[in-house]
Length: 134
Image 1 (cartoon, rainbow, N blue to C red):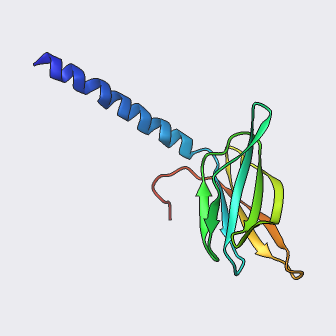
Image 2: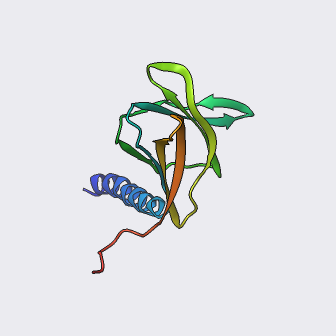
């Protein structure tokens, strides 16, 4: 009877520790993108691994759609925004800063008066999860 209990407590303990680790990660800042253009766009991150650029998985964002990413390593991210109909047409490229521990950043992708794509950063104070105070 001891053997099954011994096999049960270790996975349970690891599960609780993993859940607590995830809660701690939630206090770190997040960054996200919102597409305020009238077209679908593709956002792709490029990271440097062993001195070589490695493109990440492209993410398609429809008009009006937003996506949030909590995995922000380093201090900046190199982001490229392209047209999905013509992947060789780069609409925007730039280095965007990652949020600090106590902030969240929403990058809003817009079309300016000239028809070019611009990215506007909106910083939002990070608040820990918990009961709301009204």
